[in-house]
Amino acid sequence: MVKKQAPSPPKPRSSPKAFYVILGAVAVIGAYFLYMQTRAGSGAASATTIDPNVPLPKAEGYVLGNADAPVQVIEYADFECPVCAYFATITEPDIRKRLVETGQISLRYMHYHIPSHPNTWAASQAAACANEQGKFWEMHDAIYESQDRWAGTATRKPKGVLKDLAERVALNVRQWETCFDTQKYQPQLLASQQDAERRQVRGTPTFIIGSKMIDHNMSYDQFKAYVDTALAAAKAAAPNDSAAKKGTITRSK
Amino acid sequence: MSKRQIVALLALVGLLIAIYLTLYKAGAIAELACSVGSCETVQMSRWATFLGLPVAAWGIAFYVALLTLALASLQGGLVDSRAVSVALVAVTGWGVLFSAWLTYLELFVIHAICQWCVVSALLVTIAFVIAWLDLRDQRRSSETSVLA
Image 1 (tube, helix red, strand yellow):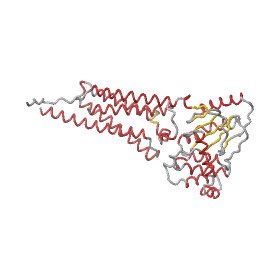
Image 2: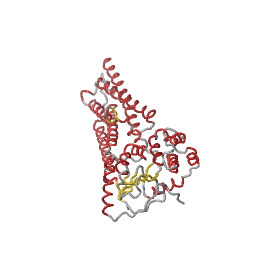
Image 3: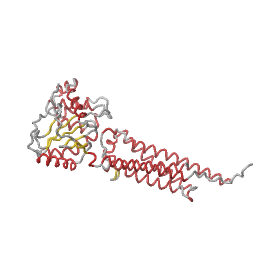
Image 4: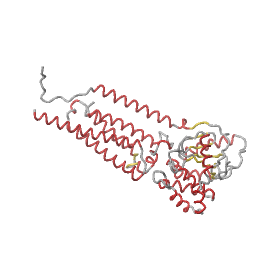
């Protein structure tokens, strides 16, 4: 039997029902995924309650401001992390001016190196060697400001740029270079890394403010809110008895 | 599945990605830990805003338009419309050009790649190719009907 050929064969209408079922399924799965993502990031869920009495690490990091300030903030950061750079260049100036300089908080910088960042250890070495000459924070700012020039996405050999920065913040470059080349502060960086792991830091930036650990970037207002809570708690508690901490990393071991 | 149905599906997936990135930019998704790759670099760069709105928000508008057009093209009277096929090619073609510009910025200006942006660029490119094949089919079927 031969079928009669239609003059213009109708376009194959592939089952519209199945199509709308697939379309609907994709929409529902996608919406669920988005909903979970927003929930994961919402305020309350992103701060964990921790024990504020965990003793300070052997690797003491670098302190900005009065070491006896009523609230002592710790930041775990990675020099090659774009969000840390965003925080350091956009938000931190306000924090320094309004909270650190007014004596309400001290800000302690600790290294936490993200494995996927090839040049972050070199940047930390550069900063630790600047600290030796009393210019950690100057170098910290310079490193973050020029992150796009020395980061792994820009170069495989960050030393040249870091050396330029050492010059820019007026370090004794020869002394800095010897320190950098010999990786003099590697043990301290490792101690800082281990401390972060011990405290279950998983990403950067992570902040410890009073009894809260916050594992994401914050605006000044959000940061201030955590500081205010911690200040109120500090006032309510007995007079602060924590020992004064030096503004340098101690040579552990 | 017909070609236009595939375009509609691609537009829906693209729309979801654009919503995801817009929420991220707006701060509703605070997943800013650095383990996600270089998406932050791209999203924090000054190129992530276009005419005062986040680029991802433009992406939402684009994919909504494409999805609407593709769904409309499946309805009764428009199924054999050549004009709709031309419109699909034009819209997806515009998407390809815009994505090419964004990918250029990622590679050569920002020096960071956001995997979601890459996925979106691929989706729109595939949609463009399929829309183009659909237009070719339309031409052929109109030719056959003329011959008959």
